Length: 266
Image (cartoon, helix red, strand yellow):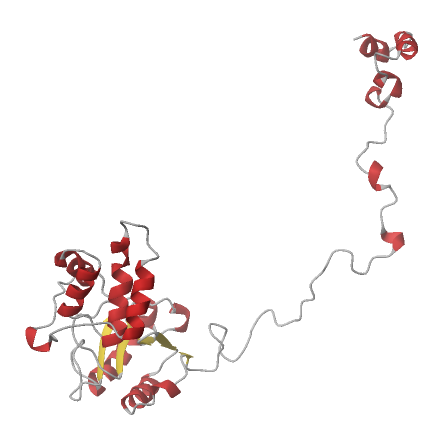
């Protein structure tokens, strides 16, 4: 894993503070954790700070550490360990994360990276001249069946071609990123086959118990006798079940002959 360091001092702002809305959210998030465990909120707070400012600054780390009563080094360890945290300024209009794991690579992610190098910057994690766009290669984003794909902020754009990615980049650069529909960029619904279903195309009617049955189809054995065996074995002989308190019946049981007699006397 590569070494991750904070951005140079010339990029670091002097201070950090949550917006009024995010400050309320942060207090509510901290209260979710038991007494003495509030430091577990460190990742959610860092993520919220990144969503607010676009990246995690040194001032952000110090702010979160003070809020959670943590040593600065502990929050720095979290921010530098998880690659979801951006430690350098990213594009203000779009930060494009290109999946480069095997399925996307086999489906053309390297061509998508060439587009990013051409339209944004030759190096990852570097902004374009206006500071509005940046890009990087990332590991699997969980949309392998729709490869190749990119993540822009929180949205996934899938089934991309180099030409389509260029159009998406231009839309974000022009401030029209909200008009680009996330998800597959071809004729498919989510992860369904392109062009529609190719199997299971027949309508399957669910079968519900009791539908279409008539009285003649019902079992002829009454429910109360359904589990009783149709046999005359000694187990079903009423005489063998006579209570011992019934003296006359008990006397009769003693007269039973054959195999039943031994069981009756026992």
